[in-house]
Length: 348
Ligand code: AMP
Ligand code: MG
Image (cartoon, rainbow, N blue to C red; front, side, top):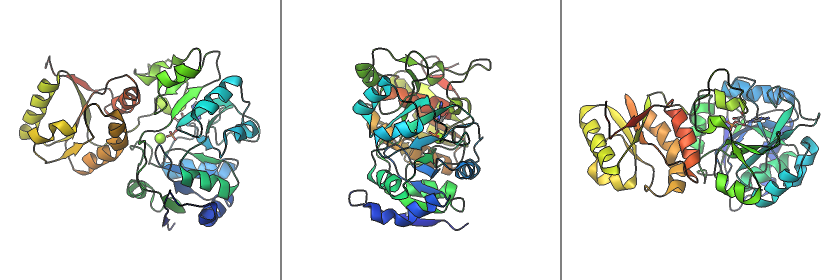
């Protein structure tokens, strides 16, 4: 398959610019599109064969459900049984980087939901994503536009690295603003449950809902007999080819460790901007200032991919804090590192 590529200015996009992309989706094809979180690999959510094509293009197990993207929060009623909690979340955070799990209606094929009777609904705020949903006239099923197991792509070049020849069209809308996938909240049980942290933080959810639980898999390793609330959580994810090690400990000690590591090994380092002067620039991938979690979220996946391309034997990165947006960074990075954390104060 020949993959076409089209650049669009998110500030000036109109629904008419997406005529062709909309037609491809209506005819059952695949279109990669930018969102405020990461790039999505889209197909018609109501077309079972389009969903199957998405799984094939990603190399993703077909029991890992897709997120259904809608143009307006109210459109959820066509595809899901909505509740008061949904309306509260929608008015606080939609359009935006939040996905809500609800009981599905029959119109959504089980191929789109990985065989589940629930459906993930999201209303993206990115102007190109919004215009694409309007232009196609259909809800768009889209997981992140990476090959299964790779970090999610946050720019069109990283999409092309994985998806060239596997999709009909890649829409290039520039780098993703947030850089981490959407927050996922399940409303299936009696208490809303955070399944995946993202830019809508746990604290922000608690400001509008009386109680929110955090699924154990968000911070921990799943044990084999634990029920999986979000099928995506059980797969190896966000993983670079080189092993990734997260460093925990006092800032000075960690920096000393990194200086020694650079002279003694073939390592890549995802460093904070403040550390750049103390390190050599070989295989150095800055992710922003230590306190700037938004910058780190924005840079993380692109720098993980770049570190991997550098041919390093090992990738070192900092263990993020678990507060605020840090929880989303922590959740992605412990998976990239397969839970390998090195405590620098007590080197073994
Ligand atoms: P991705 O597009 O890579 O962000 O993947 C979509 C994520 O949404 C996966 O981690 C899925 O497990 C999750 N998801 C989608 N639908 C559901 C659902 N019905 N219940 C629980 N999790 C879901
Ligand atoms: Mg993904």
